[in-house]
Amino acid sequence: MNKIITLSILTFLAQSCSQNKLEKKGFQVNEIRENEAGEKIIGLAFDSLELATRPRSVLLTKHSDHRLVPIYKINYDKNGKPYSGSNNFHRNWRPSEPGNNWNNNYLPGFEALYGYNLINVSHYTNETQTQNEFFTKPVLIKTLYYPAFSNDTLNFKLVVRDYYMVSVYDEDTNKDGYVNARDLRRLYLFDLNGKRIKNLVPTHHSVMSSEYDPANDFMYVFTKVDQNVNGQMEEEEPTHIFWIDLKDPKKSGLQYKPR
Image (cartoon, rainbow, N blue to C red):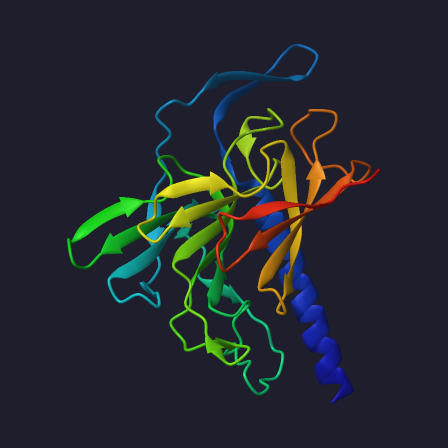
């Protein structure tokens, strides 16, 4: 049994390291050249960035008229064979208790999807048979929160979300020619039709992590402030905490900042 546990841990660590390396790749958005001294020079932006993509399944939301399709960038191995990421889900394995059953979802009422080089989300409305995408250009999505299909309960009440949240790298903020996990990470709010409403944290902050408050149905978002304006998150920069009321995510504010 100990051998099995050890092997499982090693496998998990190897997969985590591999995932971290893959995640940092992202995709190139600017021409990159080197001068005679070997220094990188960021050149022209690729105005018409076109990436080969592949859809992965249809996500069922709690609202039968609204369906989502995650879109992944197609990559190529050293032999030229194409491959793409696949759907993974953040889970919360807390045991069910009277009045609180999240069906192992990351948050009550929300599924939380992630995957390697997830670059967009397509929204489809069954009633009008129309399709639209969350983003007008490729981005690097860290996590997509969408209304869970399951019947989740919180404090004995059925939880039904009617919006989406997306944690995303959508700009080459550190000006290295790539959009990847070294850039600032934003958190956007979208309505049920996949239209962006607002940024849930200021653009000069980078999202680090989040916590959930079931008593208030709040999400607490931990960020780093890009204090030196170099477009990347650094350990020595100050940490702020923002609150988001998941009952009405248009309501949000600053919970903590260093004095």
